[in-house]
Length: 320
Length: 281
Image 1 (cartoon, rainbow over the protein chains, first blue to last red):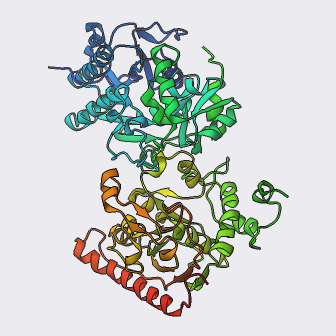
Image 2: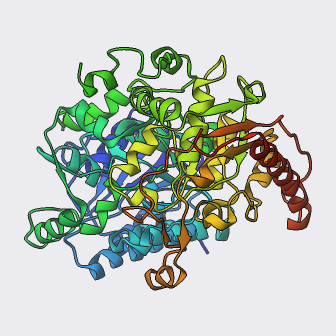
Image 3: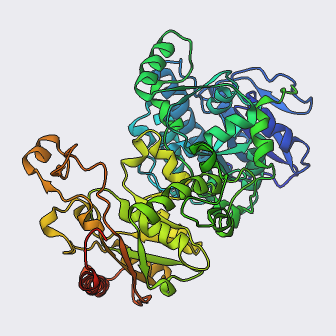
């Protein structure tokens, strides 16, 4: 019943969910100047500093209006960044937004013949565990939800998209699992690194991988290339111990014994002083790193920012 | 000069070894901050090597035979007997490969999965090049032409009671699969001495109660094996063994190959025991 045929007219229409967020704006800026694309924003929030020639629909993903954007059948690609991580929202609200919203989007993509779907997942889906191999490949099981209720939605979305990958073979589905994104973004790792002093766990100093937000935008652009499909870990310029990262930023560090930290952390979370659920302590305790060689070989993706530039990016002022 | 200065490198080392030069000569893939992908840092390693070389030269007075069998470069699996309640055999083999041959090598051993949960130990071991024991890690490092030490007896070996000394426990087959898959030569190693460093008996009932695989006690204070006796270590490095075949073969096929390595180690152990005059000197 769907029209199915995207119009041949250039430029291609690309829908970006979550475009009003910091990362969304970085991605929009990266793709906006590309003459091959015409961007369409889809976000509940207003798009501050929106370029004039960019259409923005300030609607809920699950609304009828969101469906209307796809109904015309001329959407060439969907970039789904609109995963909500707010640890303060109720689990039901998060679930409905994240899992419900994503499955709607995938439904539209199939019904109205969107030939390319890019989902931004995260390398956190593998979960930090003491017995992790140093580098996990895309085949590794997504065990994060075992211990992290807050990541469960993300794991489920990732599963939804990989099922979709097999179900809708005509559509090029790309799932990107980047490591900790640093920059002007307001995600958990960047916010953590902007704390002063930064709490760490006494006696633990895991190796971590980070990536610059602009390199993530570049990976998304690479995923838009015709023919690209599959699941890709996206890594930055390398690996460093957490302590080296903190030293590079010149922050004061408070080292807390782990048993004490659990108690302090959960109290702080309950009092609203900290935005990190206690289970996330494992991210500064065990390794959760990935092997990004598949993306390098198949998408030709290589991070351009050096380790130092990537780390320093959390202190850069946002230019919007 | 204080201990701290000495560790930082005031002079070469108490053992007279050129730790500084040997650390520099190690082949390490380090990034702009001086760390490799597994968390190894040459600076941390040098500090640890100063202490370990003292243990190697003066406490255990280690003696290494067959140094010429340690390849100067390229992937290699060191396969050894495991014993003595405390993993000093790993330390001594590591120091031997670092101190004895003309070209020093870093050997990485595979640590138990609980180790990353222990404060300090978790990251210090990784700074010294030790890795969590998973097949993925081992495969990756062998493909990068590194040297890895595996004790195929595992926990069965290290916790064996004094009465079972120098009798090899069953070998796991993981090392053989990895050797076949990555085309890695195997250097068999026999360690003489470690099996007497903590003569223990295993209290099975208490182990069962605690839910741990063993509960060793030793006949001297503090009665749990923390400090090894100053036994003399003798290491025998055998000629490299190369195996060919399918890494996905049935266990019986692999078992035969693994047994060939086990027999080689067992016969080197017999030889070493015959040559030895005394446990402590």
